[in-house]
Amino acid sequence: MSLSVGIVGLPNVGKSTLFNALLKKQQAYVANFPFATIEPNIGMVPVPDDRLDALAEVISAEDKEHRKPPIVPSTVEFLDIAGLVKGAHKGEGLGNKFLAHIREVDAICHVLRGFSDDNVVREGSKSPREDFETIKIELDLADLEHPNALPFSQKPILIALNVDEEDLPGSARLEGKFASDNNLNKDQVIAICAKTESELAGLSEEDQKEYLAALGVAKSGLERLIKKAFSTLGLITFLTAGEKEVRAWTIEKGIDAQNAAGVIHTDFMKKFIKADVVKFEDFVGPPAGGGGWKKCRENGKVKIEGADYIVEDGDVIEFRIGR
Image (tube, rainbow, N blue to C red):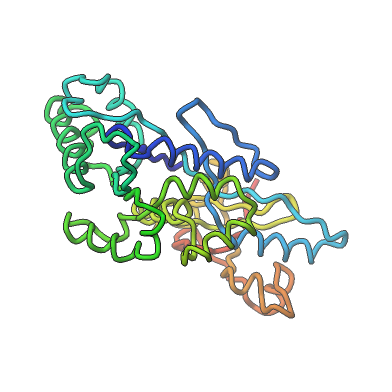
């Protein structure tokens, strides 16, 4: 299944900077991830997942020629929606067109201005909390005017507080306070510096780690944003690992094995027999011994599950399919 997130907010709050950073992150994967931007304002971004590299290494060790299989991560579709303004529900600032785009996404990411650059015109922006209320009111009014349309109030939301770089070490405190002040779950809020993310996206992976370490931050804001999008929508990933490819598949939390098989191909769901399931930690095995399908079967780590097995995040699965 695909996940789509609409980036919304007032003009000049950093939406496009954030979106461009996401696209640069996509380009960083271009060698092994051949997705392209669909339109100028839509991009498919890979979900960072270190487990895939570990699985590929294990499969490579099992292969007689030690060939490393290609890696295919899960993806998130981000839609950069032009700045909304007060009165958007009445069509102000091409509001009708932009609101129609927002109705199509799975989740809404509100980008709120928390940075202090006086060179960037505020265009109605006052404070993160007031800006959030302004956009939320416009979406609520649009719901009232179009009761038969997909209601905005039913869509999960994320908050991206676009802060100054020096605020990043205190991001947990900022996130917690905004969540508390606005009756949100802290997992819905992320403090991010769009300008920093744009600079990070142009660096090598090693240089990115050094940059983040210098800032006192463990993970990039974009990585945290994508993971919080998964969490907010109740999504998880299961993994498949073989010589042809190592891949992450996006599913809803609580889905059973038969329906998970259908995410790969509808025929897999119809012809489902059983599922061989290994926990990720068992599949990669201890550092010295390795893992893989062969050793996991020898050591009794492979569980044969039926159609009603509830798939867990990180399960490595091989489906048995009938003819």
